[in-house]
Length: 260
Ligand SMILES: O=C(O)CC1=CCC(=O)O1
Image (cartoon, rainbow, N blue to C red):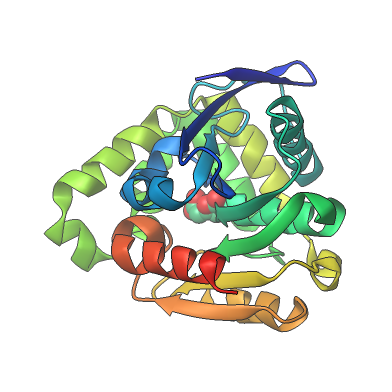
């Protein structure tokens, strides 16, 4: 796996899949790594050359001092594409990955074919939840918030049905460096990309989880209504819908990206 330098930050990047196929870049959520895309990888790599990476402050990427910003996250992605000599790619980002996708769609339109924004929002009107989370993590580490966050990631039904998957997701979250997690929460506390949405000209699919309390169906509907020509798919899932509904999620992604 290459480590790619983005303005001094080493980003852990993986490239797999069909040589010569269309390129698809996947972008993870807060507190996860590129591993979150495992349920999709077998199917996606048969169609696409798939690029995954760990966002700065996460996984095996380095953890420069924060706070970070959506622009910084977007420029990290452009550094990866430049390093790999990739002129244009499709994009699928979940939660923070979808926020980065909004920034890229508006600020680097020539680099993106189709864009998928899953379980995400463009704006947090009240930063309190992020201030509270930062305080809790500073005092008690990621473990202090892990169970609450997991309850938002996956429905209670799913956690009961698939306890091992829920445990794996929690274990992944607990590996997140505290400084990286906090620096990302700081970026989220000021998130307001409402004015970027009409600037996104790529064909865009918004995916929402019917039971997602973190980034709601109303948040998704707002984005769909502001992005020219965007469509929306609703899944029977909470926040991490690609894990809770792996087949429906994968079908939605491949269906949208391969339709003419
Ligand atoms: O961590 C959460 O509670 C949900 C979330 C918001 C942005 C993100 O990436 O995950």
